[in-house]
Image (cartoon, rainbow, N blue to C red; front, side):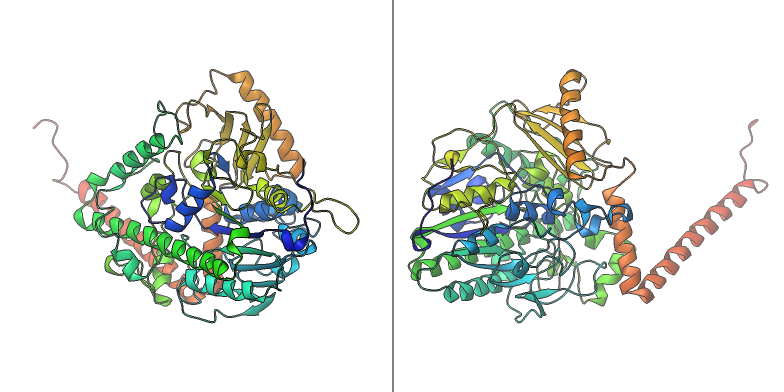
Length: 583
């Protein structure tokens, strides 16, 4: 039942904070190693969800959060970097928010709110779906998948520039301050522009902790030695913390490391130092962001607004596992052109291109399996903290919740029914979670309620505690797998063979969903290959001379290898070089 409508002056302010690529256990309140006192304090006086699901990709997640709808239904079926030519022109992959999808900002603005966005936007094609077109009165946003944290600089050869927009108009990054600081600086400016007594809706989306992970040196140094123990030990420690906090059952099994993962003990000392430093940067970036969230909340306190402010903090997807600086020859040749390095001593600094890699990412998503881009629990299940009026201190809540539930929940807590001038309510797939947050209900989804996710060929269908997932290679087989999450949150035992009828029913339900929303479904589609192809195409377009040199160098290497093999073959066939069977 929707909350009764309130007058605008009585409505709470709403602050939605989106962290980029934070794993399930990356917040301190969830058992992470980064210092996040601001987020932890919010969790202590409000609620933290232990079974909250999002999309495993950034743009689809943000589209669902802001509209309360399925990402395909609003035109954001994937991220631009993963689009295949066959997807172009399909309604679910238009890569622009459909105008009929009313966003949370539109509904709240109509209810008298002053609405603004600061930070990363990154929804669809660059410039196609900017905040000013979807209900935000003010906005200063990065419309890209990611960028340098101190200056206007891309991190992928696919792009030759970084696009910033202010109130829908192209602009520049007007400061060389660290990203988390200037994002909050702008948010504070916007808070002060609201009229006296006018409620505020703030959408604050950080670049932390997206690639390239970078942080102030002082923050990095505070983590000296913390990660020297390596990922194998960290995974074990975090898994035990998860059990101690009740995030997984005591009898839960820890998921296996990803395919081709290295043992920490197999690395040389220089490699260990490098990877430990990368994880230091990751934690420092999280801490620096948390400090800036605290600064925003302190400003709201100074303005007399904080006591009547709902704050929601979450991540757009699981942790990033790619390490592009150690990727293709083109990428390695491209980095110096931008003045960037991945030298160990420079990791995390203003000119570094740093990433944590798959092993640390798999540690960040513990107690779950895998990470971003995958339909495993580690890609889909992330932290969510809510505090403020209407949300009493309740500790961890284990009722199922989803990213498209955020909009109806916040509207309910704010007492906004969402009807437009014609009396029509916004079309939302999501459900109001406020009964769970207030402690009046253990769940809003029942055992028979189905929920689906799909991006980049990675699909999942949930029904109660049961889940089927399908992942393309290399981490999956492209076939459906079945798990009982009540007993196996780490997805360690595939029950497809022992429960064929259940699998069949759930797969049929997913297929109905996929047809309804227009999912592109081609068994031959490979998201990993498509990202590589798109980056190579982008690199060739943006840096043609560099691409030509790299191609020529690759051809030269191949020719040398062929020549060496031929010489060895000739030498082995030469007289006197063959073994004598009679000897």
